[in-house]
Amino acid sequence: MSHSLMRAPRLPSHTWRPLRREDAAPLHRLELACAPLDGGTNLATIADLSARLDETGTRLTTDTLCLVDPTGELAASAWVTCDEGLRHQFRFFLDGRVHPQCRGRGLGSFVLQWMESRASEMLSELNEARPGVLRIDFYDRADDAMALFERQGFRFAFAEDEMWRDLSQPLPALEVPDGMDLVTWSPRST
Image (cartoon, rainbow, N blue to C red; front, side, top):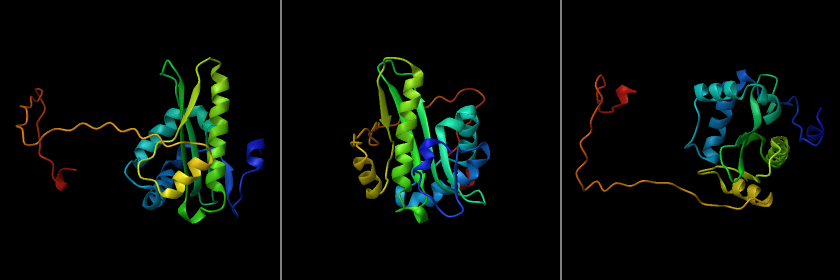
């Protein structure tokens, strides 16, 4: 067991381990279970999660963590990714979840601390002078999540990009490329 997991909260018959490629469906079910409390506006599909797990490849063993029961269901997950494309900083995205039935046992604090520690390790592995910034994206998470983040030293920074169009003005003509048809959406078209 790694040093960081020695302090990990325990749940009976659950095991801490990295995420695996076959965890896409359990990860999706964890997101669905968390959605009523954390908001469900940006839920990934199983296919999206599967692709993301595949793209992460060997970094799954170092950049992810989950708490899993014997049936493969997840009680918690943690995933750290880095955007190296900015010239002025490395941006580390922290994506953690704890199943609502497992909250209030220190799992959220542990997951957040683990992600912060992993991001720090990743920054030192990059071996560059650019600073690292930790970022947690959330859209409609519950107040308890905001309180947890603030207790860990995060501060809220509101950022939103929206584009508006005045619908009282005529819509521009739409040119559809050859070989494509424009179809009006309906519930049957999905």
